[in-house]
Every structure is written in structure tokens, then in C-alpha cells.
Amino acid sequence: MASITGLTQQQFLDLLETLFPEHWLGGLKNPGPGYELLQAFAQQAERVSLAAQRLDRSLFILDAVGGNKATVNLKLTRPDDSAGAVTVEAGSIVTCTKGPERDTDNNRTPGSARLFVLDYDVTFGVNDIIGTPASQTATAEAPTYGHNVPGPKTGADGAVYPGDIDAFHRLRVVDSNGFQYADPSIKVEQLADASGGQSAALDVLGHGRGMLRALTEADATYRSRLRLLPDTIGGGAVKRAADAVFAPYNTSILGVVEFWRQDYQTVWDAPDGGIGDPADPPPGGTYTQNTFVFDGEGAAGQDATIAFRGRWLDELEHRCGFAVWVPSLEPISNTSMVWDDAALTPAAHRSTIGLRAHSAFDVPPTNTAVGLHGGYDGFDLPRNAVYKGLHDVLQRTKAVGVRAVVELQGA
Image 1 (cartoon, helix red, strand yellow):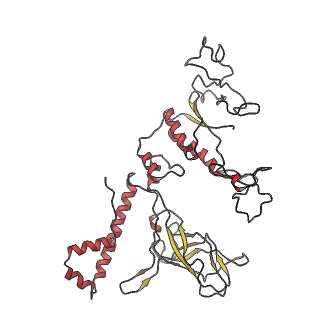
Image 2 (tube, rainbow, N blue to C red; image 1 turned 135 degrees about the vertical axis):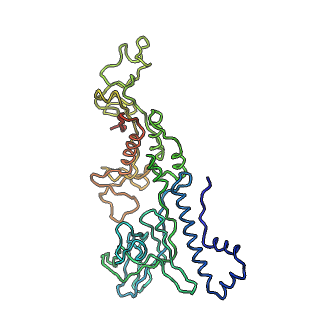
Image 3 (tube, rainbow, N blue to C red; image 1 turned 60 degrees about the vertical axis):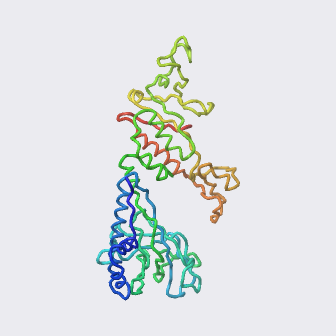
């Protein structure tokens, strides 16, 4: 099925050039008037064509796309320099005072406003009435097509109409001493159309299939995975689903252990005859040494590389369950404190997939070279999210009535 391509206003006007005689169109253009009506019709046709394209990119996996936040160029000004040197801080939010998100009293309808967040600080010097940089960028708060708001336009009569972004929703201003205060005289002006915004249609289709996008997974990869038949139930499916969670971190799971198997020992003793005795083999083949131990693998006095050891389960779980044994990931964004940290350079605090914190003691508050500063009770939220994501994937992959357990190496 071919994708729908949206047509522009100019393409519709070019079509009219082929349908109507040139002497009739020429009179509407010059001396006119009249051609502006055709321009308006062509603009309406462009919007309908664009809506058809977006619908196509929202309904079908083959054409659907992921979400993206629109960006826009703005200019900040003030009427005079009486406030002296001030800075509008990054994170200030601008919005539109016209459009469908406003009611008749010009109050914002909750949840429907088009909001944009300033990406960088804008500085006004002592004598400046135009902020620096003169062209500031802002990013939409949400990934939607609705944030592609129009910028300033020039009408057929030469009149200039401003863009939709024209007010602050939340303004944060600090003076030269770093004190915050309100300055309602600062205005925002949109310099061009906001562009790049699109809704996360592909993710919605994936959610409906119970297949969420993996961290950093590209549209093409996610789209291909959604088109496959569900890979569920079997042990191989469990391993493939679990490995997909850890693939972005250049590692894989350590194994899948099914509790009902003879080579997973849930009791005190190995089979009669001893470990691997060919004269008295256990049912199902050679026995693997993984008898029950209280402290698990990696405990004091044990080799941390030994195989997954038995866990003492109840009568229900050992008949109907499995464990996915996962590695201990390197830090991704760890904010916990390390006593007597021997790392002396920023590079020493980086892992192959992320960053661990520097001890917060004796680190100047202005030091940005290291990155994260450690603290009491800190933790690695993105790393924890990987394990939580694996747990959620297993619940969607396993058969009904089967218990799925995530076992962390060394835990």
C-alpha cells in the first residue's frame, strides 16, 4: 500500500493553472482582485491533504511514526531598559493567547494549551531592549502535530500578521544578583513557523498490541518488531524478549531457569550416586550442580561466577514458574555516594553505558565537569527502570498462571 503524500498550497495553485485559461487567471492576479480567494481555497485543500497524510501515518504500522516535539525560533524584547541587566531563565514557558485552547473569556482550557519551553537563557544587558541571543529556540512540551503553530504571515495587501506564540505561561527572571522577580514587560515574538512536531502514533499502535518501544529503539526497528506475530509463551520467546531489553546496554541475560526441571534442584540433596555419576543418572540427563544454598551465588567465600543456584520455593511455585537470571548492569545515572572514591577524573566516573556520581563532599557547587554529585540514599533510577521494564515484558510474554521471577546477579 502506497503512503499518502500531502500536497502544498502551491501544488494546488499549480493545478488550477492547468485547469483554467491563463487569460482568466492573469486578470485575477494582475490587476486583481480575486486571486486571493483561490489562494485561500488552495490553503484549505493543503490542510485537508495534510490531515489525510497524518491519518495515514497514524492508522497503519507500515506508515506510522513515533512522536517528536516541535521546535520554534523566538525573540524576547522589553519596552525599555529601566530594569537593568536581567536574565530570562531556560525553562520559562511560552504559549498562545489565540486558538482552540482558549475559551471566550481568554482563559486557558485545562490540558489543551500549546506550551513551549525555552531551551537556553536569554540575557538583557543594562542597555538592551532585545534579548541575547536575538533568535532563541524553544521546544514543545508534548509531541503532537498541534504544536506546529504558524509563525508571522504577510497578507496579499502587505499587512503582517504575528505568529500564534505571543505570551508567557510561566516567566522566570533573575537580576544580576541572582534574585528572582516578576517583569511582565518582557514580551515574546514568534519569528517563524514551529516545525517538526508529530504525534506518537507508532507507539500507540504498539501499546495496543502490548509491545512497548524499547529504550533508544528507532522507528524502523520498532515498526518491524510490531509487524511480527507475537513471540510469546515458550522458553525461547522468554529469552528473546528478555535479551531485547538488555540489548541497548551491550549485554544479555545470564539464563532462564524453569523450576520444574530436574536439573534445577529445589531440595537438599543431589540424586543418588553423586554428581554426574553415569551409573545412576537423574531423569532427563546429566545433573547440574546447583543445589540449594542459603546465601545464593556470589556470597562471601564463594566464586561469584558459579551458576545460578537453587532457591527454596513453595509447592505451587516450583511446579509452575521460571526465573530470568540477569546481570548487574553498570551505572547508567547513579547518584549514590561512594566512600573513599578513588576516581580522580571525570572520565573515571563513566561506565560504558552511563555515569556514576562523584562524592558530594568537597565538590564545589559550580563544578559541572564531573556531572552527577552523590548523596545519601541515592540510586540509579534508569538502571532500576531496566529491571522493572524486564518484569513488565515477562508478564506479557509468559503463559497465564505461570509465575515469572527476575533474579539479579549477586543479589
